[in-house]
Image (cartoon, rainbow, N blue to C red; front, side):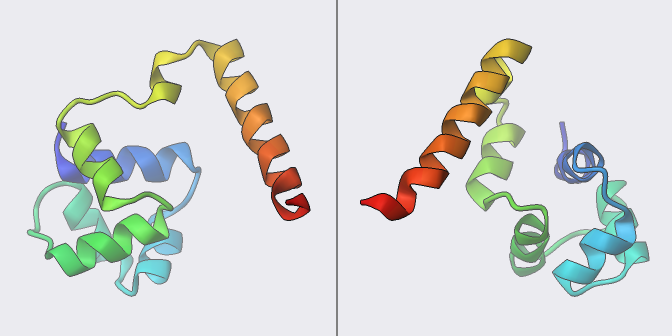
Length: 97
């Protein structure tokens, strides 16, 4: 998969428009569309802003680019649900310690 395709897939999974993500990244929807279609090169600085807007790290992006699956990608639906529940419970108890 390519960088633009990874960004688009993440945006679509989050059910966000080009305008939503572009605004948070400090660019415009047309620019983001060209990046997602690999019609425009993207600087590391802009790529970082896009990753921030999509709540992912550059490391996550490059791992996905290299084909390394995240733990959540290896889990079935029930496993993902358990992982999300665990994360939510950890977040709730974070302030208790």
